Image (cartoon, rainbow, N blue to C red; front, side):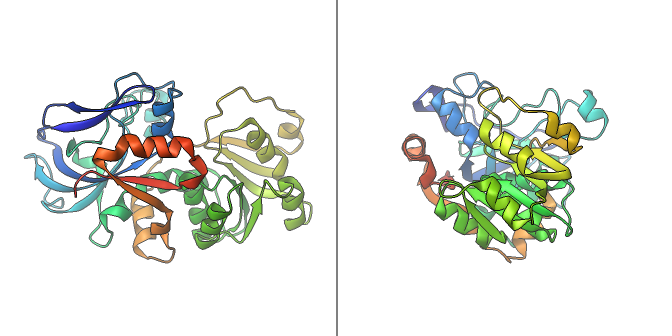
Amino acid sequence: MRAVSIVAPRQVAGVEVPDPSPGPDEVLLQVHYVGLCGSDLNTFRGLNPLVTYPRIPGHEVSGVIVAKGAAVPERLGLGQRVMVSPYSACGLCPACRVGRPNCCQFNETLGVQRDGALAPWLAVPYAQVYGSDKLSLQELALVEPLSVGYHAANRGRVSEADTVLVLGAGTVGLGAIAASARKGATVIACDIDEDKLRLATLLGATHVIHSAQEDPLARVRELTGGEGVSVAIEAVGLPATYRLAVEAASFAGRVVYIGYAKEQVTFDTTAFVRKELDILGARNALRVFPSVIQMLERRERPFLKLISRIYPLAQTAQALADWDAAPTRFTKILIAVTD
């Protein structure tokens, strides 16, 4: 079969790879949509330290089950629309032993440490697919990135008593916004892009801060009566937003970091102790795919508005080049693998 590979930084090519065949505990998917992630863009740019080349990208997957192994249970039937959990877990490392395989020490994510889904067919273990008869294949392709933000809200123990600041309104940040709003929190979204802030409002943000036009810390203090937010979720990955999350958090607050900082971050750690902050990382997603599917099935929020543009598989190189040239123009790019 013909797949799309990033063969070197800024070089994308079609490659021939063997057709997959499902093992006894696997399903074979006809891949329909693959969402491009920031990790894919960084792979294209040559800035992803987790990737070796060549690499077939793609871990935000939706597809249809077209074959299955003998050990696959009957609840997964041919023709079922599904999304894929793209992570692996060793089962033996400290994280796996305490029931947190999302941060497995030896995790290999589709399209990052191992080849991904930008190909017509994909064989995956049946335990890693989640179906919905109510969601379209485009909606199912949004589940994984939204789940990363949902997991971050869970890590921050967000509840209806909280005021939550989400720094960054990309797809993952919007997932944190939607999850926090679903949990009943008051949500403040902060970004430099007006279109993304409009999306944040549609997905549940009560307040928005355009950080290119106003001082975000001053605005947070104004909105919270000078106290700061009980939960700050960082979904950008810049030193400035790493520090802002700590500064904006209230005493006894929680800070959750999703974004990978591309350079070292320096802190005045006095605030860590004086405020007795919980500083938390959030990696991938843990047992939230069914909850996110249910959230989308209710259709209380216009999640399809996250999709900025859909490119055919043959135009994957153009999609990555367009995103690289104008990153603020796009919230989510989908690649239509199957017409």
